[in-house]
Image 1: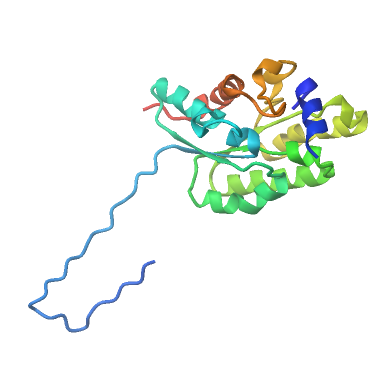
Image 2 (image 1 turned 90 degrees about the vertical axis):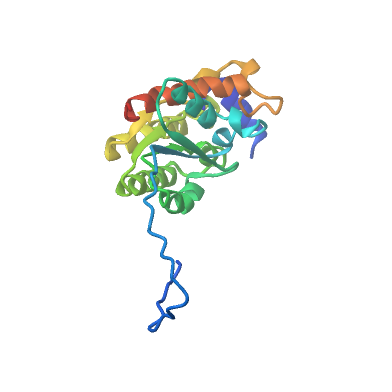
Length: 223
């Protein structure tokens, strides 16, 4: 997050077990249903906070859904799951990432850290939690896309410098794909922010979706 948008945000927020009958009765035929392989398809999971969740909007107007519709419109086959939870920090995301990874996504997108900054969490803690999330995704076989944000100048020069650098540091250490300053298109554009002064409008979400589309397009296999 950056610019006037982030300044407003800072001010406003503080098995089924089966058995067999050892002596089946001849009069009762036994039907065995063969296991059917499930085709997963190309799956993307977006782990994030209220920006990802599309707070204040129908879920189909949040940037994950808009990105999915855009890529499908280009003939690419994929699904994008919105796993955004309002208020989530990097620590909260780290606590639920393993559950999300049970779905075996091909790509894990991470949009977290803004609430850490607003709540004054130490930068080192945010860095460690994001690296934990990225490493978990990669260990599960997913390509990880990290959506970076920037701090406003009102956070103080030392904190801003450290915070702004952490996404690049996590990307460099882990090899995750970085989308820097993800919320940059919303900077100083109040018409793209809802009446709460915090969250993107549908048009703002479309701009964010376009950034995600650019990151995902080369990762989705052509059919």
